[in-house]
Image (tube, rainbow, N blue to C red; front, side):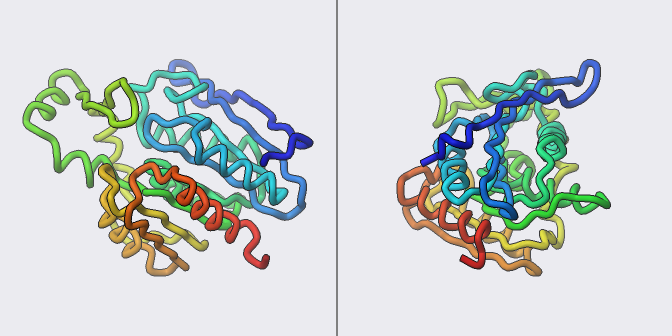
Length: 268
């Protein structure tokens, strides 16, 4: 479990200016062993940094002596801002701001569902910078890159298309919350400009993908498609025959922790 001798440090950073400013909640647990990359949690759509997988990631990092970073996107969890204002570009901007704030030399990005998309876009944006943090590895759990254009738009009903055009959003029943999922026209339109499954994706680091084969939200064929776009990387794809979208059962958590540990301490 987490070492109480290295308590977490809670921060709030402001991202954006004027009417676009929002307060982002960040939790950093410092490392105790020099030279290890920090684990960075990138959550999914409507999830927050207090979920089981995020906390288990931090506990693992603490046990290894590595730093751990968790944060909530705007409109999620403890962060400010309205959820309906959220887009991939907006949440990507916040993820970049968090990395700038914590100032870690190396990171392992752990992205769940939509967080897998954010992780891939983060690497693309970091590669444009001269002085950048090194991404030492990726662990992607039921990754959903391009989910707006690949998984949502093709399935839209005529009624949902009408609601998007007339109201700017549509709602659907959520399997994970009593509150409905809300998908806005802004999210879908912005998603088209953030697509990554359009050509070669060069991460420059090892990638481990964990994907359930009975995932009702992100079919495992989507993970197979992602692998096709990662031909230059060291990629491991673990298909969990009876795994769902959350992959939060004890055996799933152990798979996640094993994948993270291999990237934090590759020589161990």
